[in-house]
Length: 179
Length: 291
Image (cartoon, rainbow over all chains, first blue to last red; front, side, top):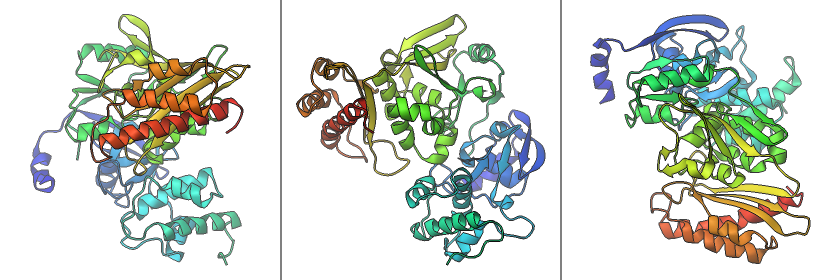
């Protein structure tokens, strides 16, 4: 029903707007958005950064997780105007110079995904955790991803993927694979 | 889902925020973390004409202890309670609760001020604030008001906060030697609302007798409930199983839960008894210097 209504809604006149300036993945971006625009829609529709997924749209699943000033948040429950003059990091920022982030590598090596829908949010929660706590225990990992739902793998391999990244990051950029 | 349209304001001072709230005569809402407000707006359960974003007001996020009190600013994030050594060491009831509110992502946005002023009887911090004897500092067009936490909660989603007032600071009596507290929560899974939550705060004197007690119940009534009779029973008693068992029976008596997906009313009531005893024991252990 919501989908069918979308074209009509778009033809309507815009409501109140605001000008925002947001640093997204290191680059300054500015836009005029409706005040009611959610951060996830700003990222996906205004900026074309579709790596951030919309899952439940009700603050439950965490597929839309991004980092706002370094902290993982659910971008379906943050207004774009709340990100004004702040820094957002999305999953697109993880790969640098053609090299995967250790967390991305971990998800591949440990088979941390099946359908992949939850993966961007899962990885952003993992990145936030490892920034704060580079050597988390399994309990701390499970706690850190407790706001991210996966309906395929049952979390075991996701936890392993994050443990892989933790070892890899400790070993440093030239460090080898975990035994 | 996209929220309904609204005018957006990001004032730089508390007074400016209050002026805007006042101008909209009850049709503006304060936006703090937005973790309750945005979901209800998306569901069209609330359609405010304007949002007043208080996150741009400087010096509204703080946790500090002075000679008399612990003071927490309205836009302090729930996870800030978790990350604070001061809170862990001296006010562990708040880190107990903060550790289990919603999930880690929601806690990065959700604020202490929002949690206590929303008026949801299933929110965890109100019971902690009642047990700790907190005072809420509000400011409106006519000036400042200070309201003790128990008087703040009037009915489900109804509080003493006027539409043109802002709850800007929470003041908690400074922790004393011999004080211990705990929040114990039963939930089906992370992120769900509690089935039952119990906040307990005890002050045990040098002779090993309870000098003061604070006890409050989450999610078993139209508002958070202060267990006044149970508190009264505890004062003057030794902090032992007999006193705690009796207090939990009294607390059970005031619980008035409803049957829902989280369990039948009888079960929830029984859990009030179990959790009250656990919370009191943990509070007493901590008062004696344990974890």
